Picture 1: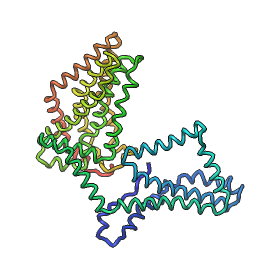
Picture 2: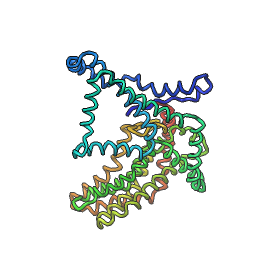
Picture 3: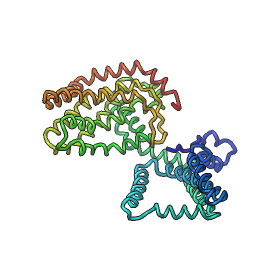
Picture 4: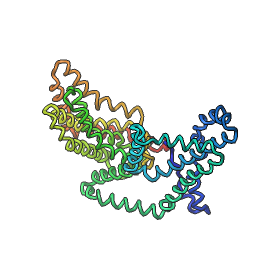
Amino acid sequence: MQSLGTINIQPYQTLPIKRSVIVNYILLKPLVSPASYLTLAFVLPFVVSTVSREYGAIIGLQFVAIIVFLIWFNVLLVSYLKRRFSVTLWGTLGVLLGFGAIAALEYFNLFSFFAISKSVFGFLFTNLGSFALVLLLPLGAYWLNLAFFRKNFYPESFDKRVSKKQEKYTSQFSFMEQFGKIGELVQLHTKTILRSKRLKAMLYMLPLFLLYGLIFYNNEAGAGMIMFGGLFITGIPMWTLGQLAIMQDSTHFEAIMSKKISAREYIQSYYYVMLFLCLASFILTTPYFLYGKEVAIAHIMASLYNIGVNIFILLYFNTFINNRFELNVDGAFNYQGVSMKSFLVIIPIMFVPMLIMGITSLFNAQSVGYWIIGSMGVLGIIFTKPLLTLCEKQFLRKKYYLCEGFRKKGE
């Protein structure tokens, strides 16, 4: 949860300021943050009441110095790890697996890191001058950060990577341009998702949610749980990314609105993105049909409801959310743009079909509930054009409200 120290270096490039000064400012700024030293609120009373009385004031001061050096080490190491690995899924999983392996070895008594830690800290806290050894830890972490910045700080190398990445994205999605302005907008939405750390992290995690059918679909699951699982599995990619539709364009929304792009084309582009996510989720989860006829029917009906109803609900309700969404904000523990309005949309998306299943279950007619939900989805597909027109009119009513909210930075 520690924020990385950042700075916009462009205004300083024309000033007589060395790069080393900027790098040191970025690295050392977190060390002067009071939040980094909350641990001392627990350590100092312990030193006064126990360590100083047992070993003397000098050892007590050394105890505090060692804790401070460890805090510096943690802060600097976290900064390096987040810059080095936070943008990749494998890096995050590697850190989590590392901690999991340590906990497993400790739990099964295969290897005790706790015993080693106890011996090491016992030696450090009771031998005068040992704080000098601990000082090597933050110095080493500081050197790691400097080595990282030596390779990644220079604007020339950064621009080279960005242009290479943009070239790759352009070559990958240029085929969409043949579909006119809507295709170009779909291409823009795709690039925006891949540029955003948060959206890209969500995109990587979505395949894991498709495996939730192993939980929802089993011999003991009732009709309501089966329908809930169908809605969740075939709709979670669309819900996750669809809730941020329009808002993900907040940084360049006014630029889009200033172009010769109609509201219908803009809304329709997001409709196709969500439709693709729904269809892809349904196709990837068809192996769940092996669970039986009831699961297959519920799965199909849930997918139809997501396509014919939930897509339009998200398109309509997204016009009420005008929180600015920064693409370059870190993906971890990031809830930017999330508000109570984001959760209210869950009511028509999930509770309405579950209410239908609940009512039909009272009359022991669960299969009727499946067909009602599926029929609602089919009607939505049939009336796609009128529903898109409804979303378009709502977007036009809220366009300036969205522009006003998206201009506000840091909120």
